[in-house]
Structures are given as structure tokens and as C-alpha cells.
Image (cartoon, rainbow, N blue to C red; front, side, top):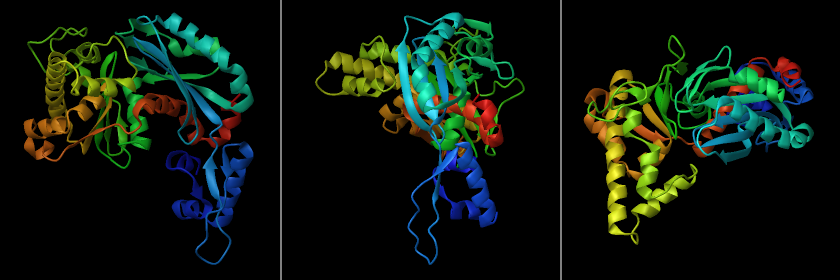
Length: 383
């Protein structure tokens, strides 16, 4: 029941009765337990079209929250997300280059300390979910390799817990985004889809098959950024030549529009303005050339992914979503026309629906998972 109202929104007792197959008195008792624990509230009764008492709405309590952290090479983003996927706060703190793991911990510690009075008075904090652009050992919260951050074998979860007092769960950023889009966004209701995320650090991704994330033997499945698309291209830090993330890059897109840095919200507008009439013909031509170049390589990479995995859809997040939108449908057309026709002829290439909140919501799910699996553990999780 708690999972239902968290993921699907407010629901009436009557709807929960139909959904679970439990009788009304059992539902009433369970709702009372959740209300008593402070995990849900009951709202205004919905209008009844039939004879009888209206059924009140059961609403996930958004004051039960997770803090979230997303360190990247150009910024650290801190978020606060409540049950029901309510984003109370998301703030991006630009950095002059990537921080060391210790510097990131110190920054988050200071930011959380500044919020402590608000957190203690208004919210019940379950922990900190961290989305990292790198490989993570989930059991220990150790970042085994985040090459763009220059982190290797960093016990980030343990350090952050020690610094803040909150339990911490760390995962790869693209995997957290995959979960968020599957639950709340463009992947919802799709049992077979792949997700690719583009950030300042590069390109990562994830796979959903039969409605479940595919993790792989080491938990690293979905590293689409290291598929070779251009054998004569640029060297990648992984040792290969012409990986997808060396040919499709956020920094090259920013350079084309004449900017050093923008937030995720500002990039689409900057790209639109650069292509619009009124700017110099030379600049618009350069931007269009770079856009077409990156769309072409992205289409080739996606065609290979579609041929290998046969998904229902490809969901793009981060600056990859911006590329897709700016291509005016050309990216999808290229994927359909260049891939194996039997598999790619009707593939959908769509932008992530959660936009700039994607990683924040995804990181929060790392913390909410234990609560949803066992609501009776709430007291211990929140302590």
C-alpha cells in the first residue's frame, strides 16, 4: 500500500481494496497503522457517485524525506525529496573542476549543517542517496572507479555517514536515473527499455528487461558510453578509440554555442538561441554542424544498442535529451533507418520526462527502497 501511494499518487481506500484484494476492514486497519507511523495522511474524501460513505484519499507523507547528492566534474547538486516523489529542494553548487572525494564530503557536510535546523523541525530524514558518475560497489558504497572525478576505491558512503550522521547509499548515476524514469517517467509501463544519460562526465546508461533492471555480473551493465562508434576517432580514457562518449560530448556542445558552463535547464535555451535567426550566420552554421555531427554518432550508437537488446524504447536524459529535442525528430529517424530494420523500424526515442529532477528523484529511491520493503522499519531508519 505504501509503495502504491508513493509511486502512483494518492489513492482511495476503495481503490486500494480493489488493487490488493484485501477486505475493507483490513485496508482500514493498515491505513490506520501507516497514519499512526506518520508515513501517510488521509485527505478530503472523493466525491461519491454511488450510495454510501465517500472513500478518503490515502496520501504519501512528503515530510518523510531523503537527502540526495550528485557530484560531477562541474558541480555538486544537493536535493531533498519526500515520499511521493515530491522534490522539496534541488540546488546546484558549481565547482572549479572536480572535487576529491574528501572535498565532496566536506562540502556536503557543510551544506547539510546549514540545513540542519530546517531538517530537524520540518522533516523526517531517512538518509542520503548518492548518484555518482562511475562504478560503485553497492554493498559497501565504495566508488571503485569514477574516472572523470579521478576517484578510485573511495569508501564514499562510510565517509559521508561519518560526516553527517545519516546512513548513506551510493549507486551509479545512470542506474538511479533508470529506476526513476521507470517508476515515474518515460519508462513507466514499459517492460523493455534502455536509458542513456549524458552529463559533464560522459555517457552512462541502464537496461530494463521484463520490467526489471539488468545489473550484470558486477552490477555495471549499461556502460553504453564505451561502445566504439568511430574507430578513427578520439582516444577515450578507457583505452579505446572513438567511444560514444568521446564523440558525443557536452563540453563540445557548449563550446559551439560559446559558453563555458550552463545548468541543465539553461542548455536547451542556449542551443535554441544559437540556432535562431539574428545571430551571425557563421555561429549558427557552426552550432548546426556540431549538433548534426553529435546526432549522427549518437544515432549510430543507439542503432547498435537497439539491434543488440531489442527494446521497446530508448529514453534519453541529460544533454542527450537536449540533442534529441534539437534534432526535431531526426535522431529517431536516423536510428530507425540505420539499424536492423526488423528491430529498429518502430523504435521510440524519447526524452526523459523527469528533466532536471531525474537524478535527484533516482537517488532518493536508493533510500526509500528499504522503507517501502518494510514500513515497520521506519522508526529505526529515521533514527
